[in-house]
Amino acid sequence: MCSTAVLGTTDRYAQAGLSFNALRGIFITHHRFDHNVEYGPLLSIGWVQGMPLSVRAYGPPPLKQMTADYIRSMRTTIDFWSEDLKMKPLETIDVTEVPQAGPVMQDDNVKVTATVVQHPPVKPALGYRFDFHDRSIAFSGDTTPLDAVAQLAKGADVLVHEAMYLPALVDYLKAQIAKGRPVKFDDYMAHMHADHSPVEDVGRIAQEAGVKTLVLSHLTPAIDSISDDTWRAAAAQKFKGEIVVGHDLAVL
Ligand SMILES: [Zn+2]
Image 1 (tube, rainbow, N blue to C red):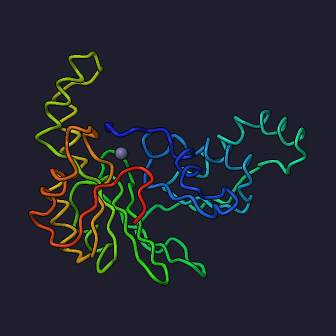
Image 2 (cartoon, rainbow, N blue to C red; image 1 turned 135 degrees about the vertical axis):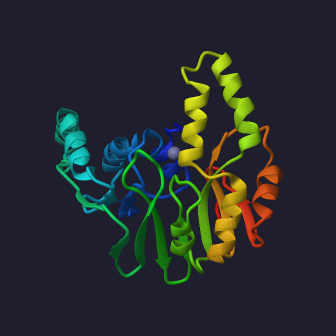
Image 3 (spheres, protein in one colour; image 1 turned 90 degrees about the vertical axis):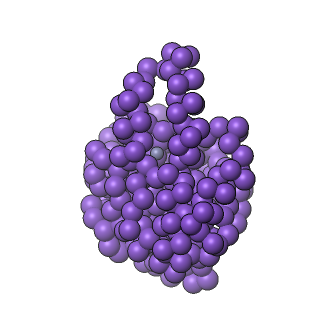
């Protein structure tokens, strides 16, 4: 239950100027709507737009079942399209389930490693690290402040970490409830404390990891009234490197 938008992955991929032809791997951190709801649509639209059928997906179980069920649900639609445009139908894709921490995959371009993060009751919830030849980037996924993330990101160039700003969250949530959003205040705040990271702690984790750049992402609440300077100042209490406030389509 996050205040970030949940749709847009496929659009953002296209808007970033990336070709679906170039899509080789899809990595899912955990099974909550704001992280997986567009997995199926990405496969469908990607296929229509030229995604290779050799694309691979990685993520926690039951990703194989989810993939098969989604493609099955779209069978008729896929068949109409493939008959019409003489395309090889999307039958299945190669899925690697990642049930625990450790190596995920390696090819000529990248080595990927996962760690298990703290996001109850979701199990497992993962963070990933991508080591390229010239750069390394770690992603926290959704988690409380965790030593495992600092270890995963040790010495990386970039850590992309979720962050929440508690002073604004309380007011934001009260305003949402007043507008009729069906959320119980105490339950929601208990979830936020048990599942997410105050931005000040994110700075501490980044400092512990020794990364060059911290990107604050998955911002909660994601509202314009919190300035980038406010986010940065909170993280900078403990982190001495570069701090970037993540926005869609930003390029580092
Ligand atoms: Zn989330």
